[in-house]
Length: 260
Image (cartoon, rainbow, N blue to C red; front, top):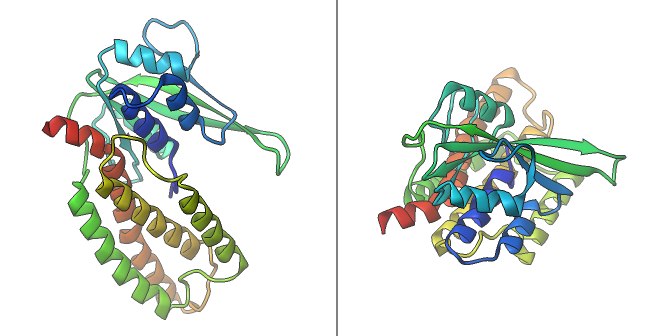
């Protein structure tokens, strides 16, 4: 799963820029976050990769009025609308951004260099043609919030019974890091998003973290094959619901503008 997908940052701050709520430099800096650099390759009218500030301006000139997130997984093309070539690239990256108002999408390619503790991360966003059609399987904010609450209750019962809800020093460190980021406001959406979207995003990220910890906790108390199967069965729908909620939250600014 993607705890804080780069496509989410690009869409959120890109939407804020397109709405005139932030400056180009503020949007670009927020999208890059802790990465070293982001470049955009394949923009119409550009011979090579360009910086984010120029790329966002070029997208606006192409007629882009909003940006949506896609978080596809095998068998679940969440947020995608085609064509197959774009869907395949997005599925490989596990994320993408789809423009509204122009038939283009962006898929990130992440490169890392350097020793542990001093890793240099660069991101290249590849611009590709997309099909202008409704995105696949994206819920409304209210649907996503209800689904999250139900899935979290059900999964917590099963994972607690199987002793795999996430414990130990690694889990504690991850939870502490999440709390610190939340308190610092680093996971908040960009200006222009409704309060409900911020709430749904925070809950989806918390559920996402729980799923990641459960997957990474080894066998825990689930020694029997049947119990291990029960863990996977409990996590699979929760993971799907969390991804749907993340997409709903990031896409809510566009949906609100389209509703007028």
